[in-house]
Length: 432
Image (cartoon, rainbow, N blue to C red):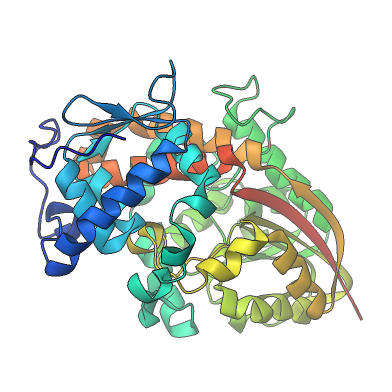
């Protein structure tokens, strides 16, 4: 293996200076004693890890390392500033890895496949003796991000209330911010699909509504409104829909959408925590909201669904999942995604979700895995996001924010491409 050149090389000049007031931990690489002492350890761990992976890491001194260094077409990581990257890795692990990308200290023309390679090796990135010390060394999730009733509103606002206009720049016309369902299922590395994204989003929604038995006269609770497409389509079937959200931006657009769609009299959209719902429903539908519930509150989430469903009523839930053995390993951890994208978020495994639902008295009726559809959904979002550079700047989202979201979308796509992440539609039936 070739050692990193320790010389501080200039950052990429294309994005200009980083706003240190807005993004202090991106603008400034750590220079503490901890960071300096951990730097050589981080270098050894990093080089050991990439040497076992089918990727190519191009260093500032021109050397290429990694298990795919000599492989044509291997996913490539281009390091512009090795010293800052290593200090960040030594100080805060994968949070530092993401912050280094946001700072322009490394880049990749193959971000999603590069992340997929890291995800494939996730259990072997850090040697076992050091991995056991990771929880004591790295930051833990702040108590203020825990998904209590008091905290959940602010957690949601920090992501979903960024700007409806911003989300509209890269989402399709349905404004669906969750996995579409392509038919036939795409391969994980698919670049395109003959089915338009909006059509695949409506197919996703229609399958959930079918699974929940939503039709004429049905009383439906939607937990997590999104931007109103599911409530609209349920109401167009003749259902009466109560849809709840903690995002005021989503609430406003949902109300506009159902009114403009001519079904405003059949939809009530409210700013409400799921724990505060009362009433009785024939069906409950929830699309990728459970990730914001928190592992400590899964029992409350499913107990709420059981409480409001009439006996024999159905719930259809779409949920992002991770491998079961990783749930406890990552519980309470604090990641780059938590810090910059989804404060308080947590992924469960399919097994844990079915177990918690069963404990609440819900019987599993059907499950569908659709991870490859999410990989393609994210690819299309990322491509559209990349094309909106000027429009994002006009809305006040600077280049650092744009790199942050490019990393988030590519990071997520890579997780699904590797199979480390999956997404399921889960159908449950309420007991008596």
